[in-house]
Image 1 (cartoon, rainbow, N blue to C red):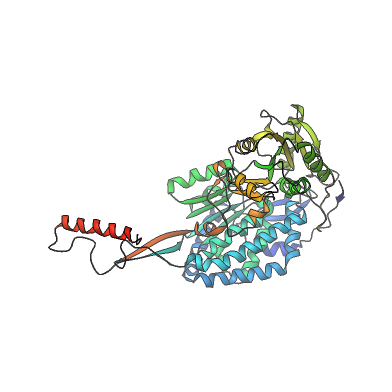
Image 2 (cartoon, one colour):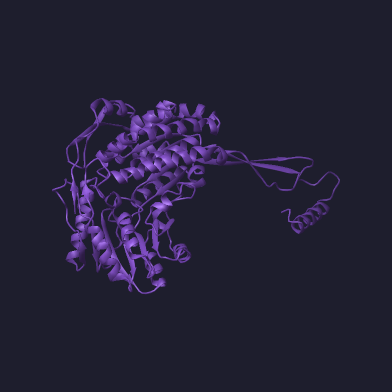
Length: 520
């Protein structure tokens, strides 16, 4: 495996001071380290419970004027943001690489997601939020409209692995819907989020509308949820359950994108070379630190050996590195705890009888958190690697004999976030995919086809989440639906001097007529 080395940090003290000034903080701070080197990267302000209260007060004051604007007016700063974001591509890619440790090509995927997702919602929001005529109780007599109102202030909690995909990607539709946002990104990756907030303000977003607080969940998690009108969360299933429990007594809504143990099925008619290249992306993008990445490969027994040979060869050719260019195919893990989990899962599996096909060890020669892309076979249910989410560059490969078996094994998990099917027959791939219990399914791609389809919903089934991002649902979740129905020409009660029995008979006959002529 070829390697590359990082160049010095591109972040100046002045740039860090400028963007971190946006954090609502009473003076607390912490140091974040660069995953590539383990050396300090930046001093980051931290927030207290009182700071969260202050952030909500500022957000609520700003939200009232923002909600009074038309959706088209709210879209204008976002459209300007897209232009500015595209123009400053390399600046944000550098920041993403240094704070996450990911390869530049995976930082670029985040960049594309933010640009395309923001543009999609800025274009679609006015139509999605417009008042809509609905069928009234009776033709002509009742006119009914559906209106959409903002929730108020959204509490946003986003993770470290894709900080701007999740942070900006969820905040933009919340803002376009007329809300303010109090956002807690992960502290390790706050710089990229703050850079985007600053750029959005430069493009015309009211300064107090997108508030940022930083800190540990134990300190500011409860205050953040307790003051929210709606909560949007991306993270672990365990943490998602806790948020649902906190939201329930107040009867506020929430959306949760949680964990996954995502399967990829290689059918016997698949193009094996293409499937092997696709598995590299599906399993090892962002060093496997992607909730929709593939951790289980199910391969038809007729092509198992041939596919595994192709996949092993592609894996062993991968270029690892930390340079700020597009050459590396995989970067570093982000946290020491992830390296520990990956190492423990692999070591336990091998010790219990799993076969190591490729990789299987840390690479401290490249940096403190590098781990080789790893393939294992003979993984059994008594191993943590089998069912637990590893969240690293590790995949286990299994044989199956029939299509039915493949679908059953793909669904044999408490998770249901993403899946992949590989076949030369696209109709067959779509048919198999429709049987997999996952919120997104990709045919002849690992995750990107569905992830980049911003007009279609994305989220999890079973223990992988509640609600959807992307599509109409990704914006409308941040609104309250209201029905306004106006009655005209006559009352809905029986007219004066008409017996109710006669009135009931007339209405019953009217319904029969409406049905006959397909008017209802």
